[in-house]
Length: 211
Picture 1 (cartoon, one colour):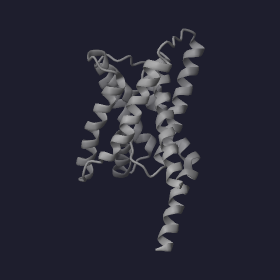
Picture 2 (cartoon, helix red, strand yellow):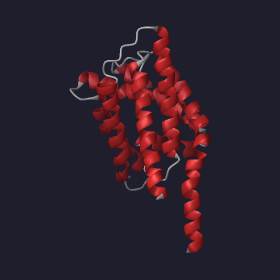
Picture 3 (cartoon, rainbow, N blue to C red):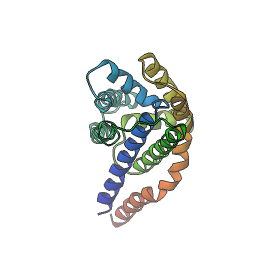
Picture 4 (cartoon, helix red, strand yellow):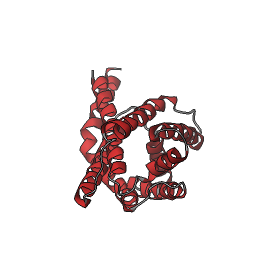
């Protein structure tokens, strides 16, 4: 029962983070660094942003396996598909007709998107289920460099923003703010999700004691 509840939290975290990404894109202030590559490629290819993201994540999944010298984590296809498909649902469905012209509505939408993305990522990372390859890559680099999650994310997303800009994606002030603030926001949100981690760590301890 606990693992079922954890999976619900896991899926909810992924969906909330997808909503956050969609809100950032629709704010008109610039797409997120990681999304800028997917958005840029979708501008040149007859595919959705989510579809490009799924393909890119699968490639990154193989890169992670190479870095760790382990088998590819094919179970990560679960969050990959959830993220890609739900992002498309929000972008081309629920938020398709959203047009923000007033500065306060743009900044309000952007701020809500940034907050939702950080909280969603923090909560889903606290569960024992597969991570999205990009977030797993961040964790790998965090362990290898002994740098904080926020520092690793800032450097990684800055590089992705540059690639997105070269692809013609709408990189703007919002992109810079996501690159600078998303890492610290996730770091800030991580303790909020500590009870989620406690649910399965306590369960593992009980199982070991019984054994």
